[in-house]
Image (tube, rainbow, N blue to C red; front, side):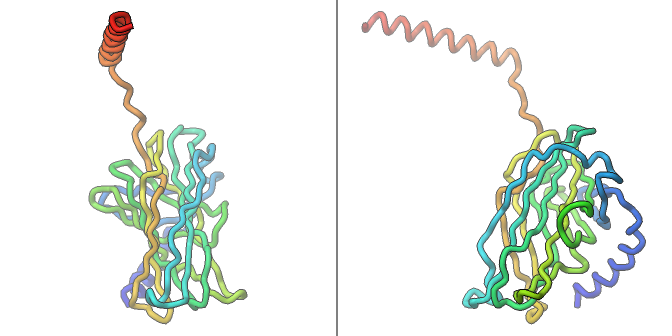
Length: 243
């Protein structure tokens, strides 16, 4: 019931925001509607892919751990460096893996951990792979966690002729010039026969923004060089003494 009410409320907002083909700022503690965009509409999205691997997790048994019915999803872990800005754009997307005898499974949301206090603008790509993007995004008060809600859930059925939907690539623009694969992600979903039960799949190795490596001060490098020379001479003297 809660999900239905939120879906109804969001649907009206999505209709109003549908004409906006740009990413929207998502600040710590804030929320925003998420709309589709393209590299033609937003030239900052064009760039060179810096990372594109697949995050996997154990298959999820439905409806309980003793069941022989299970579903599985991967997360495509993509990062692009913007040609115009030189900054990192993060583009994870949900990919279908397997659904064996589990009936229809619904994906409601994707949670990303590891964004710290980096500024983010969010959208999803309609000029790439996938069937649907999220409708709404929230960010935790400390800024570290991003939640993407599918007001109209991704549907994955187990029969060969049934629907098997995947998400569009997210496009999370940041001011970061580097990234590291130290973040985490969680997919939340439901089974149509167990609407009040939430299922989750957890992933590690998510690409997240990071600061550039901090160079050592010149004085510290000189000190290290001095220590190296000192110990080199000591070693040489010891070699002569005991040689």
